[in-house]
Length: 266
Image (cartoon, rainbow, N blue to C red):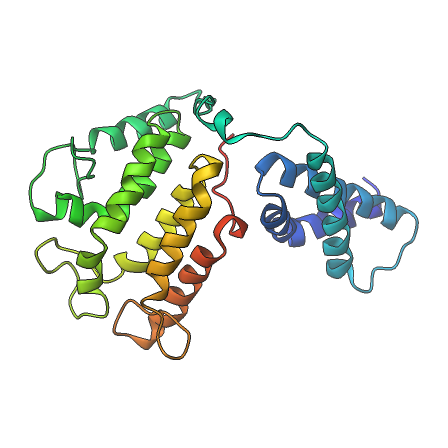
């Protein structure tokens, strides 16, 4: 291994993950982001071999990655347009699962789903208390259905129903926002469910047919903005320390399709 190769490897270990996250924000597709990272570090190796400047390697890497991402975005625009009608025709992707872990994970989630669409807080699909009713499950149903779908099961219709359940039972979540205690109230809702529930609903909306997404995003955005504090931040607990978490989670909701995508499994 040449000294340049060793240097490139060290720089990949130091910056590769950050470049990948940057590419995912721009491209939203795991494979495209990986290709962008590979192209960026191959160019880095050539740059080092040619004795190029190394005074600001991190900045150089992100500049090259941005150009590589833009090239891929331009190539996408030349492809045949994807029509909303196509969404319903595409089944969930099947995933390589050599030891069966993904299948078991999907089945465990499916077994925790009750007939009315709620997901039990713990265990199989036997409702044991108010926490397992639709209102108690409102913040976790969307992410559960999204995960089942990404693991090859479920349906867009179930995801849509879970997002609707979040909106329907939002008032019960709001009753517990900024309250003391943890799992209290009639549905055993913890205050910290509040903003992660919005984030999970936002992720689920990005799996809707394209024609439905704009309206669903607008509805969720209006719901979220009702709880913004006067200083422009969000906090679902009584502790100042949780304000940064609440605000960051709310901003990911507001980013809509520009937020980091749910990573694809390989």
